[in-house]
Length: 280
Image (cartoon, rainbow, N blue to C red):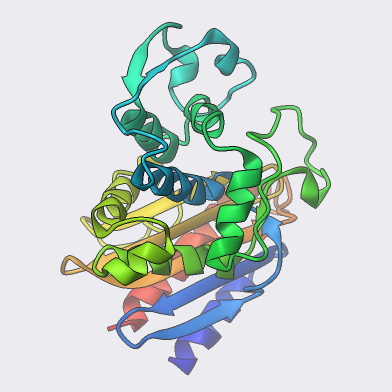
């Protein structure tokens, strides 16, 4: 496994931007990190913690997955991700579907619907309760005119290790009531969360270089300063490894003329494939 760590660092150093990751081999119970405790812009990877906080509120009976949510025109303003920005105001859908849409299409109309039911203060309290000390939810969603060189703390921030911890808790919580309780949840709700992650429509990073048909449960992030992804990779229907991947200071265009986001996506895909090939 030391060879894997060397390979991952070599791949990471092949590009000029900052690359951080957290890898957990779930079979050997070993963790490998690069800048794992450093703070990065979270982009939409933050939505996994939002989903889990919402499910904890469902467990406490403060929220209901069957609650009817109404699409309001005001929530569509300046939204650039997802599908509800194009839908007819007044459309009704259950809170369950709002959560799903927030996750699998990274829909920011849906994200606002959730964060009108759970405050940013509650989100930060929830993350702290899990031990996610480097995670700070600051805004409901970033404005589209946010500059490339924006201040790090103008957006929600996190660390690769924080998101790895969260995914590890969800995997354990799906099988164990005590582990689920740490998330304020139940095994059933944790299994629902894992299902939602595997329904992901945005698969350009962790899943991109894995064998066709590989099951991956992930949540991507598209930030002005970089690209991110966090996920669980399965083999033979069992979780094989957890990977969280964060980049920062990614150039708009690379020296070879290709877009910086394409280089960041490819780098993450190469890292995931290296893990797939090395972890038995």
